[in-house]
Image (tube, rainbow, N blue to C red; front, side):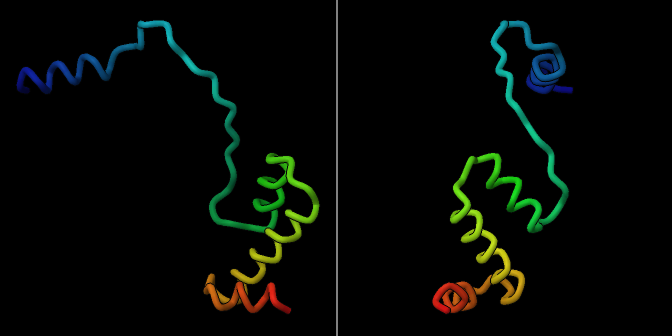
Length: 78
């Protein structure tokens, strides 16, 4: 192991000792995008009901049309 590799190993494998930490709230969701995921994200953001409905409409169009821009535009114009 070279001197540089040894230094990197020592620095990255030791505990952080300088006292600065940040607590971050996290939530783990399942893989993939589902209607439940869209609803959860909207609720977490505190969005109004109309925004949730808009997002759900976009999600359903994406499911139906394979995420094509034409599909999204035509869905919202109807």
